[in-house]
Length: 231
Image (cartoon, rainbow, N blue to C red; front, side):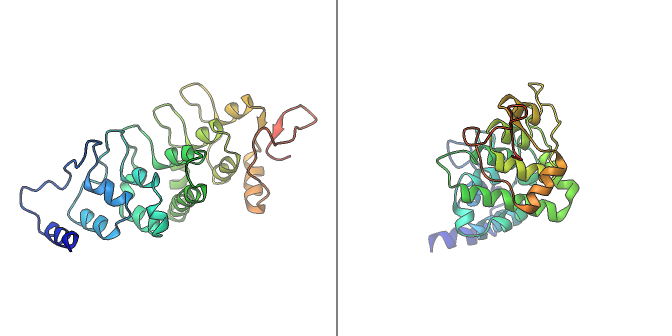
């Protein structure tokens, strides 16, 4: 009841009320926590009263990125609606010049996270952008953070073969150079992986032939001693 009263008051805030005020020592706004907790009615309200969607917390992350560190949007099955309401958080780089996909790639190898949930978040973002525009999706996948890394660079650095295959099949560029003068392909080559060509990757995605493998379990190509995703 107290929460309902507070929300009702927010519909008609005082003239000098700042809806973007920082509510804790970590630099979060009400929108950060409403999104993290998957409180869809409150998110809608905050959007309607012109909350700033792109404010970042002390770690430099925005509302959608804050949310993907939690399971609430998945459990309540509201993530598609959340990213629809907060699309500017999805598309605009945060204070670290990163998009939510950069963090999700790193979370995809975090043993403390439920990988089914992380995969669901990734798939929802990729599907939403792909349905809107293939060009938009490609631009999103090829966006470089402060270190010059795209999502595909990070998948390579973390040896997430399954995610590499997914991103490359969707058109992520394999030849973009990061701040260390490395491409996603050159990073994998250092680990004795030979990635498939774009055409092979797209074919493999359609046929669902790839499996989640690591260097320790992947057999070697007898021809040159290098591992290949296609073996």
